[in-house]
Amino acid sequence: MTPQATLIQYDPSDGVGTDVGSIAVNNVLALISVDGRSASLLMTLSNSGEKNAIVNVQYTSDGEKKTQRVGVTPGESASFGNTPDDVKIIIDNPGVKAGQLLPVYIQYGDFSGSELMVPVLTGDDEHYADLVPENAEED
Image (tube, rainbow, N blue to C red):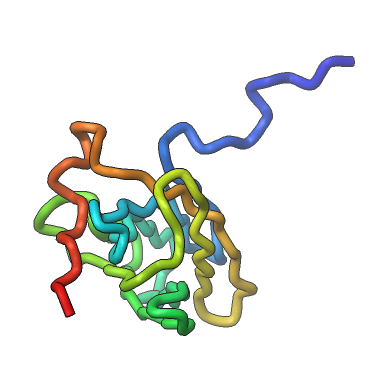
């Protein structure tokens, strides 16, 4: 038998996603600055639960593991970096280049977390041009 293609799970976007408890993590991708010294993490978190959720987003910045905590209210979605006005998650010296994968670990509450291998893109696509982080300041 041939597997039915419509039953195969995939991410219909540039980014990747997962579910952690009642939190759906959607379209996660990173946009790298022109100089490669900073990246902006784009994602949307949706809370299908009945309580506020504090989600831990862990990544390597400047060679050290960093955790950023973000909140999502029940029945709502929170967008990070997807528009110029969104809250931004900026990763300094991410250690990856455009075309590579950036490991990002997502965890919420008592649920086991999930590591995503996030695609790193440039702002060459018109949809992302105004979302790329600025070049790092010169030392």
